[in-house]
Image (cartoon, rainbow over the protein chains, first blue to last red):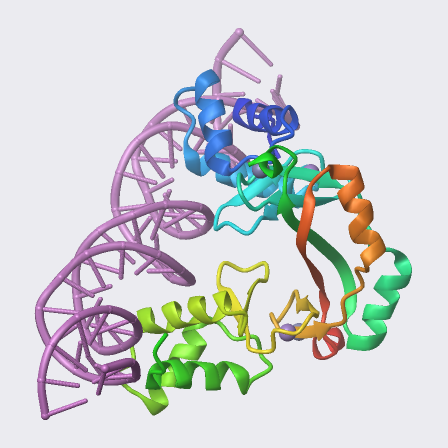
Length: 125
Length: 125
DNA sequence: GTGAAAATAGGAACGAATACTATTCTCATT
DNA sequence: AATGAGAATAGTATTCGTTCCTATTTTCAC
Ligand SMILES: [Mn+2]
Ligand SMILES: [Mn+2]
Ligand SMILES: [Zn+2]
Ligand SMILES: [Zn+2]
């Protein structure tokens, strides 16, 4: 794996926001620094960063993927009005995981929890 | 809302399987009975049935949506090898929901838990 | 039965994501 | 510092799940 300018830039962008951006948003930010970067490169880099565990890919109700440069174990809540995504501590513990394995016979390797609701701003309207 | 043959057929198909099928699979099944039904109609009906709460739409890692004709409160586990989806009891309780509301300030209206792993068949290889 | 409104069939369009490939860039080796 | 092999990129085409459009058909209250 080579350390290219594009890779550094994409990683820097995704690490310096807490908005859980789309690939397109990362692309637009990257173009401000490197106008000739291509969208395909952004997608490929985000995919590879995910494989390396440096980035997490979310599917937050909408059709577009969103990316998280803070890959620590946490979950997300999506505002059903404005789409804002906030971090949420994980409420699933080891006991719950064991129970799921017992009930289903699957060997569990990961889980994802998505919460939906109204963010504080959107509750005022 | 009118009671059309197409609506009855799609509802019947999605209720009589536990495979959490894609829209395309529902379409193929429907064509066996009604060869001229259109894919757009299947999508529209699945969308409306979801609005009515008779069908649940899942986003299971892949790019295709999958549909569930058993809308009771339960969650899902997806096999990372073959894509099979099984039902899982919900491990999130009221206390966890309260905690998330306290921490985030969001008003929670729903949640979704997706588990990932290997199904019993795929563990043998 | 009649008519108005709703729903459908068939096809076009959309858009997020991926594939393709000629060219550029990186970096281990010298 | 120069070389060169192959990894990565830019630009573009393509894929494919889903949605949109509209002339025609179907439903159902009267
Ligand atoms: Mn996050
Ligand atoms: Mn189910
Ligand atoms: Zn909001
Ligand atoms: Zn499997």
